Image 1: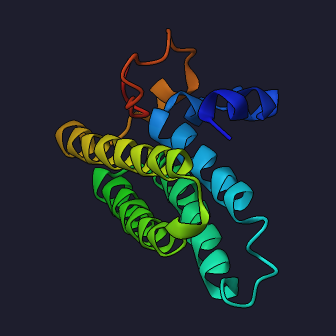
Image 2: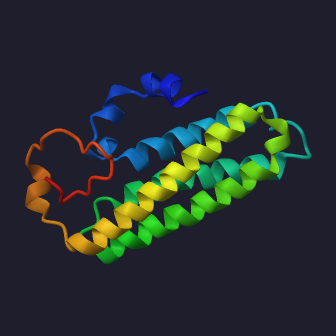
Length: 158
């Protein structure tokens, strides 16, 4: 499953949420679904039960931590959750590497590239949070313009 195949399957209500504009979040949601998709045939093999469970938990934790950090008022809190997302991402990568022999090479390359993109985006988001400081919640209530072309928009960006 590629991102292009996955995105049309995402419900509109999810796409209407403000956080959908954050590329790292979208990619992390994709990674979580991809992990489930990639491991569906391995789940019944006792040799891979732990790897499948841990991979799916770690991959799901990436988007959850981005979502939890995104609306935080203080940059310190946002950064903390983005760091949690990075550590979950590192764990997911490790679990993916442990099952790499069971996946097609192109699939593994796609997942590694996705994880690299998420990592880079999260690092950029942390730098932005450090630079921008606290969120103006009144600005969060106003309709905003188009999504950031780089996908790293913070809640207090225009």
